[in-house]
Length: 332
Image 1: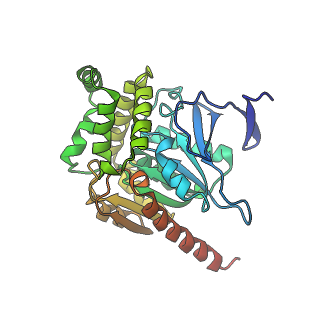
Image 2: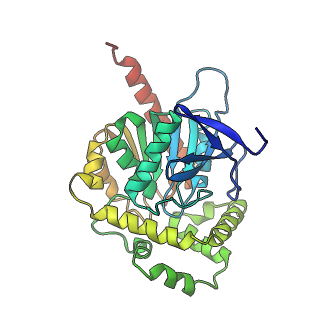
Image 3: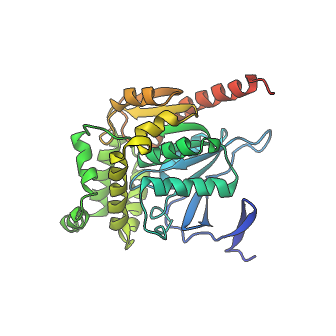
């Protein structure tokens, strides 16, 4: 094969994998590859284990939230490099992944994409992580396909709130037809630097934690996204998908599906989260049957970026406990 093409075994088939036209930044040790599935083309960010000696670490998969990308998980991938064989997806329409073939941006559609990827890659069961919208997506995956999930880690999961915080309302308004084009026109003169500062102020409990280098990278990424012809459409349709998921009742309710999750679950909430209230932690702890809670003082909506060390410590405890429990379970 040429230097620009390789293949990866997905299930019983060899699927062409072409390195993407890379726009997202790569941290040291990371790799990007493009995987074609039925109905979607995904860019997958991976960080091979830092230590090659001894048994292979367990597989983990990371799913980002609304407006994010696999890059959101780079800090945690680095910290957990010796603990898991980590991969993070760019969901269709985000990062370096093109929009889905069917134009479906619902939580259910994204959950199907994650399931198809796990089935095809034959990496499951995995330690599954999700942030915000990604938390809703992986909750649905864990509920309907428990065989694919070893543990579940949810960072500020976007589960339905009866009384959302006022600071979260502008994000919810993206789902209203006509709002996104209006916002795009109103902010057309904003510089990428201003847009980035507004975003960091919304997502971080303390934007001062962002280094000058990190800010520059975020500005470059935001500038790149604005050049994508489908950027605003993806934001609007994805926001609509979250709102639609919030209105579903019965067995399709996200809270009902949370109750069906069998995997040990780590819940991570920040006390300065402006998008998902940390007060939802109590309800989430009651809904997920085998859960533990990490509340981070002064942290915002993206704890895996703002305080990856704290998230990693809590996950390692979950990993150690579940590993010891499996070892203690008698085999029939």
